[in-house]
Image (tube, rainbow, N blue to C red; front, side, top):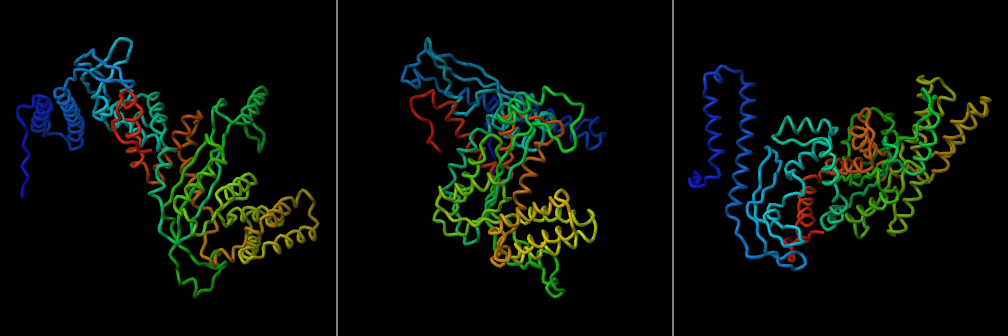
Length: 506
């Protein structure tokens, strides 16, 4: 059945939007427009259509204003009776469609700030930028620079937000990040027997000097007194602050052999191509503000919310950093959970390649064969034999202490972490042995946005952008923005009234 929409002809508030719509229709029928290319017509519709939308929003706000009921008195947060009433109090609101005016009734008394019930009904922000525009800011700054966000909003909406205000909105809109995830445990439980995979890593972000951690800042201040035209080879200025990156996900078991990993399986086995196991229900995040031990605890809390009874197999992929291991073991004890620690195989390969160049020329087939054979042996559980063998080779070839340094470093690494190098067991159990997810997360969350040429970050701005990028990457941005709007109402409006307006969400 065809639905009929009735428009009340008496609603004078909408007459302006109606007039502009008629104006646009007439322009599209004009002789001048008829001769235009379609791209020029698109520009007209975009510009004038946006103005129609702005007028529609203004009309709705005017209608709400006309229908607002004046109260004899209003009670403030401490029960004071606000008896002084002012009508048609006006404030500006910059929306996705352009600037509009909100007219409403205000209540106050001597020595007290005014309250505006309609502001609470509309959940207006403290500043002039609407929630729709704030959402657009969140989307833009999570992908592009602040300057690019300013230009994109200018080009694709009717709103305008200067750069300084975009930076302020970014920080403000990200403030409920931790609360949002604290509010999720009841919804994050997974009915699954698949392994629960955790991983963490660190990545440096170029910061302004005042935003560096204390030790790095002091080193930077000391270095700044010794100006250099250029840095020596391998030298780095003290200008980065490490961001901790975490990831938690589930993955189906994928049973493989060492030969499959190294690509040396028999021809008949090659024909049986196995589908790659994909990470599922992945949550990733990064923080440059919180300490690494805090992020490690957050990783365990996220895993615990998915498997509160600790029935699944918990696996942590690591790179072997001493502080990282210390934090992980501390969290294992604190949360009373057994976690299988697996050393990232890619890190092992990096040590092997450096050792190979002690014997063979970089890029040579001999170096590649040397690494391939020993990598396969490590995958088969022979890490200790590989460590001893490469040391003997260095001794037999009479390499100096300096020339064999990478060999000894690789051997020490393999022996130190041999309990985490039982790859033949991990592969037979269908577990991942590489930190591809966390490495990809570091590139996406940090490199692709935070390493924009010339960028030097303040702590507050960097943390805010990382939170928004984390929400986007985890697929939680829409749910978060809904949560943020509820919390904004509670922050900005509820404290002004004695009775709560909505039920608390966290």
